[in-house]
Each structure stands twice: as C-alpha cells, then as structure tokens.
Image (cartoon, rainbow, N blue to C red; front, side):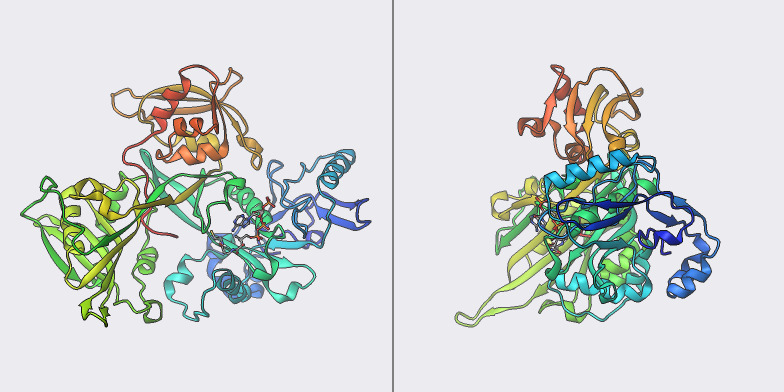
Length: 537
Ligand SMILES: CC(C)(COP(=O)(O)OP(=O)(O)OC[C@H]1O[C@@H](n2cnc3c(N)ncnc32)[C@H](O)[C@@H]1OP(=O)(O)O)[C@@H](O)C(=O)NCCC(=O)NCCS
C-alpha cells in the first residue's frame, strides 16, 4: 500500500472497521472505510521509493503501519454532483456506533440527496508523476514543459503529494492534484516549520464536483496527523477558493507599475556614499544572495526558508519561459563589508514603430535589501534605466518602504491584493511559538470545523520579562469565560501579524465578549514589519 493510500483497505490487517451503507435516496450501495492506513517511511528508503512502485514496496517491507488517530480519520469517497454529501467530511471515530453512522448518513442525505461514484485520494507513485503534472498543465493552461531540472526532483515531495483518481477509470491517471513543500517560515519572533501547500489543480473535465474540497480536507487532516507543522500556508490563484477550508488572508501584497520618470526618490530618502552597484550573473552570486535573504528573513514574517534547491528554482531561467524578456539579471548593492541588497530582474527592449520612441519594460522579480539605503540605491537604479517606459514590480509588501522613499508614491500605481493564506493546524503550538508585540492575557473561543482539536477555549498568555515584545508565551485549554470569539480562519489571517483582529472585528468576523479585550489582543498580534512573502511557491 502506498503511504497515505485510502484504497485497498482490505489488504491491511490493522484496519478496524469497514461499513456497508445504503442510502435511501439513490438506492446505491456505498462502501466507505472509516480509517485511513499509512506507512511511515524510513529515511533510508527514500531513494528506493523514487525508483518506482515495485522497488518502493520491496524497500518498505516491514515498515511500520499505523492508523490515523481518531481525531483525524478520513473517508475515501467523494461524491460527484454540485455538492457532495460525503465530500471530505471528517469520518466518525473508529469506535462509532452503527446507529451514529446511520444518523450521519441520514443528515447528509437530507442535506443533499445527490449520490455519485467515488474518487480515490492518495499520494502518487513515481510512474504517475507525468499524469500529475498533466493535471496542473491543464488546470493552469500551461504548456507541455518536458524539462525536469534537478531542483524540481529535489523539491517535489512525492510522499506529500495527493491526487484524486476517478474510480470508474482508475488507470486513466489523476484528475486532481496537490502537493506540499516542507520548509520553514519566519513568523513574529522566530521561524516555524510550515506545510507550503502548492500545485493545486483539478482537470477541467472534472471541476465543480467536490474534488478539491475532498483533497483539501484530506490534506489538512494529513498535515495535522503528521504533527510537525503548526501552520500551513499557500498562495491562492483566486481569492474565494480557500477560506472555506480555514485559510485566512494573512498578507497584503502590492503590485506597482511605474512610468518613465515616475521613480524619483524624495531628497530625504536615505543614501550611503559608501554603497556601489554591480551587475552580476545571478548563478555566480547565488550564495551572496542567500546571505542577504537569510539576514532579512530573521526579522521578516512571511519569508520561507530557502535551501540550495530553492535558490536553483529562483534562478532557473529557461529560454522557453522568457516570453520575449531578457535573461534574468542581477544588480547588487555592496559595501566594503559585503553585499547589502540585490535585485533580480528582466527587461524587454521595445520601440514604438509609429514614433520611433523607446518603449521598454523592466520587470523586478525580487528586490531585497538589508538596510534602507541599499534598498533606495537599488530602486533608484532600476526606476531610472534608459529606454524603459514601464517598470513592473510584483509581490511587494503592500506597505513597501519604498512608497515612503518616493517623491510621488501615487505614481507607483499600487494595486493591493491578497498574498499568503495561512491555516492554523495545531492551535496551541502555533500560538505558543510566535512572539507578541506586547504582553497579553486573553481567552479565545475558537471554532474549527475541519480540525475539531482546535475548537474550544484557549488561554493565551504572553509576557515580556525584559521589556519589548512578549516572548514568554503559553497557550492552554481553559474553561474560563471567553474574551474574544473567532473562527480559525480569522486566527490564520492574523497569525503573521499583518491582518488586524480589530479590522476583522469591524468586518463582523471577530466578536469581542469582554469589553477592552479585543483592542489588547489585536495590538499583541500585530507585528512590525508587516508580513511579506516575496515569491509564489
Ligand atoms: C480551483 C480548482 C482546483 C477547484 O477545484 P474543484 O474540484 O472544481 O472545486 P470543488 O468542486 O471541490 O469546489 C468546492 C467549492 O469551492 C468553490 N470553488 C472552486 N473553485 C472556485 C473558484 N475558482 N472560485 C470560486 N469558487 C470556487 C466551488 O464552487 C465549491 O463551492 P461550494 O462548496 O459552495 O459548492 C479548479 O477549478 C482548478 O483547477 N482551477 C484552475 C487552477 C487553480 O486555480 N488552482 C488553484 C491554485 S491555488
């Protein structure tokens, strides 16, 4: 059995319960398994499991089998139709009585009587990788990129992939997909292990049948069962997709578009005559870029940690993906003490044929600086390049400090949108492992439909023995009366310190139960600098 697989439960001796259920609405017999089965991989088996299913089976003979804990069992089946009656619904504990199962079924049937075939959701095997990528190419309208650079293999975690298979056509390959990157992420006051959710797609032929809903619920349960990452984070292709799964909008990002001559800095912007700029081949200075990035990451919530493979991905620049732009280039701001900032960018030299005037475009892909003077020097350079009439900068913090360095910030033509979405997976661990802007002692009443272990009242205490931000933190279950009530989605939104609980309360999404509690809690959660994630993962 493939790790995490929820089919073939009958081959697993440890399976405790299989139920045969009959639904009155469709007279369809529907079997679902109460418990998922997983194998724990040992690290030494990783190379073998990459060589294919047979090798993987051989390598893992004798691996430990365990059951998902009662809190997070999952069902296998999802129903087709506009709204599934089972889709990803958390299954009852293994000890559930038959009458309770029938009760759940009745409730589900009453809510929506559509019954349909089931999909299988499980991690892919090596030989299913091409089909997995094909799902994403169809979903994102991408080309048939056959290239497989080494970083892609290093970053793709096959054991954390999930794919949906149409059980009516199990050999036809995946119809839905997702994956996870395992990395760290800076949060207020530290760095946490984070599940970086990515590669989410469903074939156009199978969309709006509840497949994503089932994949998401299964994935969230898997992350919780793994027990290593207190939060999950993702970039949403479209804003309405992920809130229903408890993800909250945690960062606001700016997209800037400058015209020619729009980029003059205010005379009061900092400058440092000891700084100089140097053009460099990105690949040749990768380790220097990483030093700057890591220095900034230490104090910048939202920055994912970057391994060498991640840097290889950031600097990967195949000709086929340039779309008329130059190769990706790099400019460094340096000082006697070393590199203090860098920008990665590409440009497109264009001319207006009717006027003969230059009409070039320069795209800033990443501009990161360890101090304000280095940032100002890099912006001044890129906003003033000859022959360029538009400078585009994506994925900037909405409150980019450059907006305060510019002479005329309105000319950045800033467009603000959502960036990172955060899902609290392990509430007490997540809240206890970040710092707070000021001391706080409050009871939060939290609702979490998908992870009931997070639901309930939690006392958050944070103190600042040495003054400054509160770093001695505890978060424990309590029966005390609640001060503030909110959904886990709003907690995720506020977690990185950018989205204010007070604003969410003004939107009617957070409720103050004790006068004065909300302001104190909102102030404690808010963090400087505001969170920012410079690239989509
Ligand atoms: C987004 C996508 C994965 C959704 O998959 P799906 O299987 O069609 O989604 P589901 O049928 O499980 O939908 C679950 C719910 O989300 C809603 N939903 C799904 N996609 C949505 C979208 N793009 N915008 C708004 N709502 C959406 C559905 O209407 C449904 O709502 P309901 O519970 O009120 O009925 C799929 O449409 C897709 O592959 N899109 C292109 C690639 C993409 O954007 N991927 C996401 C990357 S972050």
